[in-house]
View 1: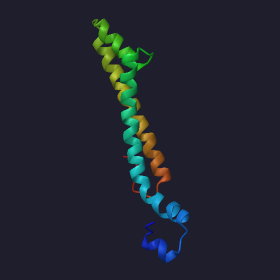
View 2: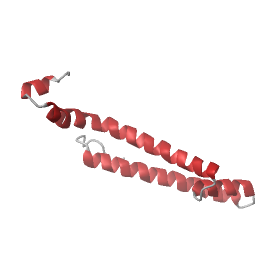
View 3: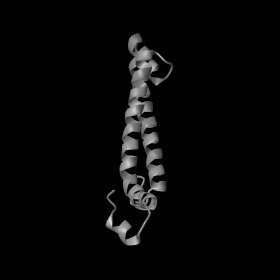
Length: 110
């Protein structure tokens, strides 16, 4: 097992090495992956609602598209904006969690 120079100098146990050195340095990348997967999961959820006809925003959009009435386009646009707003809120929640947990305090809610 490869141990970093810091671990060798401090004579850290391998579990302490993982907990104090490896995990804190990997947290920003872990949260980047979590944020990306949350966004993709949200998109897939809406698409699955469209295909499976489960009640939700996806089914609402699909039904409005099929109706194609005079008010349908406006309702579809509002639903798309709501989907985007919910995705944005989910991303901000994950970013706030990252800022709370991570050692990197430069992660600011932008």
